[in-house]
Length: 240
Image (cartoon, rainbow, N blue to C red; front, side, top):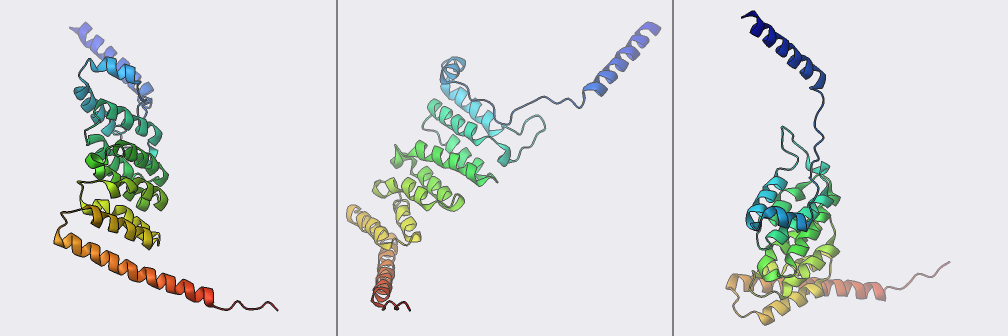
């Protein structure tokens, strides 16, 4: 009877000593795992790309917050995230899961320059099919404009929306709003005029807004032109 008790005490002592020597040693875990190659993903998926897409998406969603960790977004490697987004798009190009994660979660990073990776991904995800993915072009333009404060980039992303049929009129007008913010009222008016010209079924409320937009911007444009003419006519003072 004494032998088992003695062995138990010895093993308990060894376990305690092992814990005391190792409890400060933590596994070195990356926040964002390395991106596997497409061939590797193809082999591991075993032909079930949809299941593997969901599995990897959930893994990416929880990256940095496993095993008792909680990681601030500014610590993430957004270059890796960008390549993860693209890889998962190849497994399922129609799902809105990944662009939603990128827009509503990762784009909230405290390190604003990293938002550029999200903007670039959303633009690539949606530009080739704006009639299906127009929402993500709007989100990319919004992030570029308000987070990155880059109106040129926002306008370049939003431009295809103006000519996309079958999407909400407010989304088609997004480039016009951006032009207006830049003070380019004539370009904003051109977009509104083109939308009015090639759209048959416009609800009265939307039509009223567009007419108001045109009339107000025309008034602003006239005031700008008048101000410029006054400046041009002002005599230049002679140098002494």
